[in-house]
Image 1 (cartoon, rainbow, N blue to C red):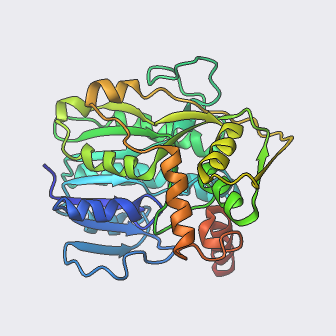
Image 2 (cartoon, rainbow, N blue to C red):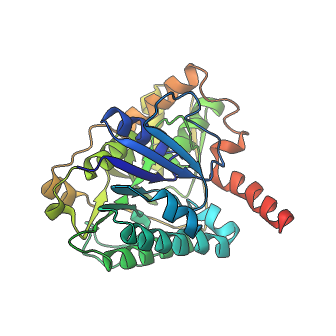
Length: 334
């Protein structure tokens, strides 16, 4: 069992829920992050948590911070298509070059287990009803293209002493202290709560979904699954596939508010993803315990408690808006 875990991007949407879970399971945790969205762990008083503000492209930093690390959970990336497309050169530099460097140095420094957060979007548009891990990857965007390329590189580094495993998560939903409102369930739920109106672009496009509590439970589990079960493996991780219109209807029903209006408008964005998660159920026994309805209600409670401030205008809830500011800072300082 790994004892010291490095979580790259650990101050992000997923990391903000994952890191406290790792600590509660007795792990020492080191977070490596840009901290673009602030320090979600500022109130933590736990000597087992070490926070490092830095860049996964910094070779010397990686060599220093990977010393005595047992396992890496690699979440860090410029996340989602709009954020990546703001600066594809930077996106490739971080998401691909940085990941390759991290993999190489992790293996060199004796890390035993490397868990990579890929994306279900690597499949692209599939006509098969069951999109399983043995299907080819045909990514539609720069973001998903480099996710797929990193997978290939990582699998080539698997050895008896360096266990690698790839997760292809569905679109994550639910409340996190580092909240994202640019993810489909979260975004449409916010519209329903704030505006009493949900705008759906298209409607027929599919999205697989998984609750943030389930995906973070899975990352914790990945540290204890037997090596022989996960070595060199790829797993989809999702709950249910819904169309965008079905998600909107589900939100209206779950909030139990008949005044919420659902409006559909045409769109050229036909990205549509769906996955099967049977493999992870059968091989690892992993079954999600939470639903999209749970995520909707979690968000409703967070709004009710005042945890979400200026939901539609606060750039910190939207990755592309924050990355746009960050890119301007880079340009001005270069």
